[in-house]
Image (cartoon, rainbow, N blue to C red):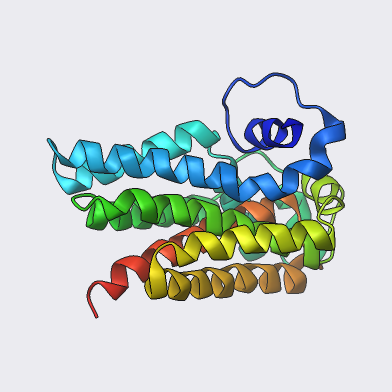
Length: 242
């Protein structure tokens, strides 16, 4: 269970003690499990709040909970990617911008749009108990997509992303992928379609990173997670309107 503890410590702000670096490799297949827990907590918040508050407020509270639990880890990566990739003119400058802790215009815009979209999607489902399963599945699928990207794309720079990419062996990628597919399948055909959308969205970010800086970084992996989760939830919500 050291792998699970490491995954919780990495992906959340929950007080689980100091990370055991020896458990880094075994933590990889646990990422979608931890993601499912984060999503379920967000979905429960949305559904519970919608009992007494407007759906939009319920969506806001749900996103606030997931952001607090994760410490905005993935959102920070998304903002850095947009600041660097859009604002930089070559590989070195893009990596330099991504390493700057200050938030730029492109990152702020991406962050606002991502939070607004996440809020709207959860609000659209908040009155229905399916929001809990959808949010949990989205959390699991998006982390599984992130792991696959981490294990199959070249590393652009040393750092947190590179250290964890080395732990994403073929066997761990297969296990993680199976968990991700199972999470999507829990919602039937719609969930599998949403899984496909998440994969395409994550692949688009990885492809962008390859062209912009030559591969992935920790920030790129954060952007993959956010984008994949939004694509998953967007497909779920959209399917109800078809």
